[in-house]
Image 1 (cartoon, rainbow, N blue to C red):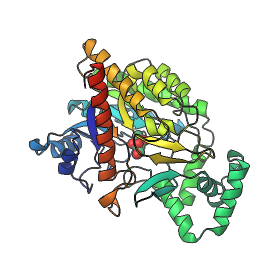
Image 2 (image 1 turned 30 degrees about the vertical axis):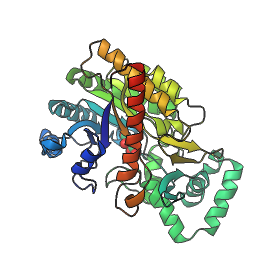
Image 3 (image 1 turned 30 degrees about the horizontal axis):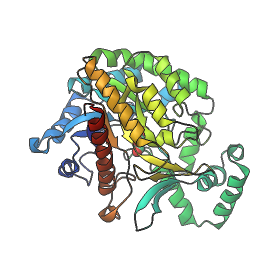
Length: 398
Ligand code: DNO
């Protein structure tokens, strides 16, 4: 398994030298400055690649793109999409020309990952990301004032949400809005409440079936090109894996993943198995999904979550939480063996420690929420240990 690290580009305070110190060799990166829907040019890709590989002694290569974003009109299924499809295909061709073969993307309308608390304090002074069902309901019902929102929350959650809202200060509400918006990658497309209401309105006729149909259309438009240029597309699951703000979700469960793989049977239509995203949904058996879909997994995000009965969840230490991480790593290692025996050249599956707690000197550093250096270094080290232990005891290639 290729050990990778998400690097946010030249503005990341965690520098490439630091990444080398973690033991990772693959860089996960995106041209976050290019707006969704626009082409990633050959020049821009080559410039970024050159930056990543400038110092050969660091031993790094740009191995995965996360993400090549899908523009909202494609998810809405609005208007003439052909120019957007063509731009996406051009970006894929340009990436392939630079030797990049794995492209992660998601199909979550409007919001990428969503949390209500970016710094939930842990004993000893560390911080974790947390999704609090009461605060989320307070946001949805009382701040956003979304029509019909009450029906989407359990009565006891709603009662606590009301109490939270009534006791909240303006600063509390600002913090909640900022936390919910923080998931949007890059520095773009942060919405304020009116902005969020208007983008939500554009999705009002998009049911889950319609969204799935729009995904099918997108795949039909881009997968043949991906196949032709040797790119593996890897859809990222919904985070959290449940409908949010009335928006449909179609990448949240085993059934969803199976349906997506069937939408387009090409191996280029594959998955990012994100254990933390999928693990936050009651009933999801992530180890079983790793085994069942192994042949179509092109990228692994390893992190863990603890779920609470009211729908809240917290990001846990990588080996502590509800997901059987050892089982997932075992499934990935066995799949690699199968690929190698089948003569596949790129048999190694890239994985990255996805998120980490803010630990020690991470606290107070201006890193992206969920992406501190030491917390992720700990996660990577733990997962590397699991990987090597399983590989040695089962005689599997690493
Ligand atoms: C959060 C990430 C997501 C992910 C995108 C992939 O930390 O896992 O932002 O990168 O959803 O498209």
